Amino acid sequence: MSPRRGPRTRTVAVEVGRRSAWITVTSVASILDELRAPRMWCPFHRCPTIPVDYVGDLLAVLEYRDHRWVTVTAVDR
Image 1 (cartoon, rainbow, N blue to C red):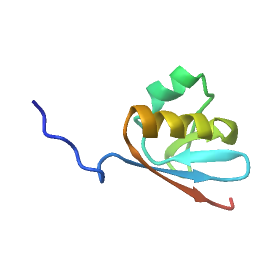
Image 2: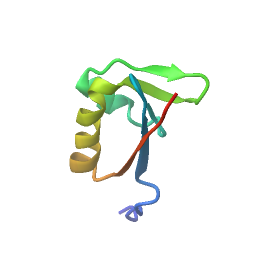
Image 3: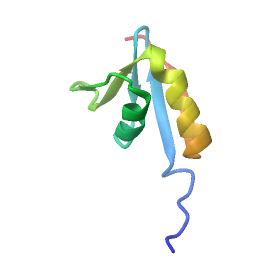
Protein backbone atom coordinates (compact mmCIF):
# COMPACT_ATOMS: atom_id res chain seq x y z
CA MET A 1 0.00 0.00 0.00
CA SER A 2 1.31 3.42 -0.85
CA PRO A 3 1.27 6.19 1.75
CA ARG A 4 -1.41 8.80 1.34
CA ARG A 5 -0.11 11.96 -0.26
CA GLY A 6 -0.71 15.19 1.59
CA PRO A 7 -2.60 18.20 0.28
CA ARG A 8 0.58 20.03 -0.71
CA THR A 9 1.42 17.48 -3.42
CA ARG A 10 -2.18 17.32 -4.57
CA THR A 11 -2.60 21.09 -5.07
CA VAL A 12 -3.39 22.49 -8.51
CA ALA A 13 -3.20 26.23 -9.19
CA VAL A 14 -5.20 27.66 -12.07
CA GLU A 15 -4.56 31.20 -13.28
CA VAL A 16 -7.54 32.56 -15.20
CA GLY A 17 -7.12 35.36 -17.70
CA ARG A 18 -9.52 37.00 -20.14
CA ARG A 19 -9.72 34.13 -22.61
CA SER A 20 -7.24 31.52 -21.39
CA ALA A 21 -6.37 29.67 -18.21
CA TRP A 22 -2.95 28.35 -17.22
CA ILE A 23 -2.65 25.17 -15.16
CA THR A 24 0.41 24.62 -12.96
CA VAL A 25 0.58 20.83 -13.29
CA THR A 26 0.97 18.80 -16.44
CA SER A 27 -0.79 15.71 -15.07
CA VAL A 28 -4.23 16.91 -16.16
CA ALA A 29 -3.89 15.78 -19.78
CA SER A 30 -6.10 12.72 -19.34
CA ILE A 31 -8.80 14.82 -17.66
CA LEU A 32 -8.69 17.37 -20.48
CA ASP A 33 -9.00 14.52 -23.00
CA GLU A 34 -12.02 13.23 -21.10
CA LEU A 35 -13.61 16.70 -21.16
CA ARG A 36 -12.65 17.09 -24.85
CA ALA A 37 -11.10 20.43 -23.98
CA PRO A 38 -8.67 21.94 -26.49
CA ARG A 39 -5.29 22.67 -24.99
CA MET A 40 -1.86 23.87 -25.94
CA TRP A 41 1.51 24.22 -24.27
CA CYS A 42 2.40 27.80 -23.31
CA PRO A 43 6.13 28.23 -24.04
CA PHE A 44 6.37 31.39 -21.91
CA HIS A 45 4.83 29.99 -18.72
CA ARG A 46 5.81 26.38 -19.43
CA CYS A 47 2.42 24.93 -18.54
CA PRO A 48 -0.78 23.71 -20.24
CA THR A 49 -3.22 26.40 -21.41
CA ILE A 50 -6.95 25.90 -21.97
CA PRO A 51 -9.86 28.18 -22.95
CA VAL A 52 -11.73 29.77 -20.04
CA ASP A 53 -14.94 27.99 -21.09
CA TYR A 54 -13.57 24.67 -19.80
CA VAL A 55 -12.22 25.84 -16.43
CA GLY A 56 -15.44 25.13 -14.51
CA ASP A 57 -15.62 21.55 -15.77
CA LEU A 58 -11.95 20.97 -15.00
CA LEU A 59 -12.32 22.33 -11.46
CA ALA A 60 -15.32 20.10 -10.79
CA VAL A 61 -13.44 16.97 -11.85
CA LEU A 62 -10.27 17.89 -9.95
CA GLU A 63 -12.06 18.72 -6.71
CA TYR A 64 -14.85 16.15 -6.65
CA ARG A 65 -13.47 13.04 -8.34
CA ASP A 66 -9.70 13.42 -7.84
CA HIS A 67 -9.95 15.05 -4.38
CA ARG A 68 -7.36 17.66 -5.28
CA TRP A 69 -7.00 21.08 -3.70
CA VAL A 70 -7.51 23.78 -6.30
CA THR A 71 -6.61 27.46 -6.07
CA VAL A 72 -7.94 29.86 -8.69
CA THR A 73 -6.31 33.22 -9.33
CA ALA A 74 -7.47 35.97 -11.69
CA VAL A 75 -4.60 37.39 -13.74
CA ASP A 76 -4.32 40.19 -16.28
CA ARG A 77 -2.17 39.03 -19.16
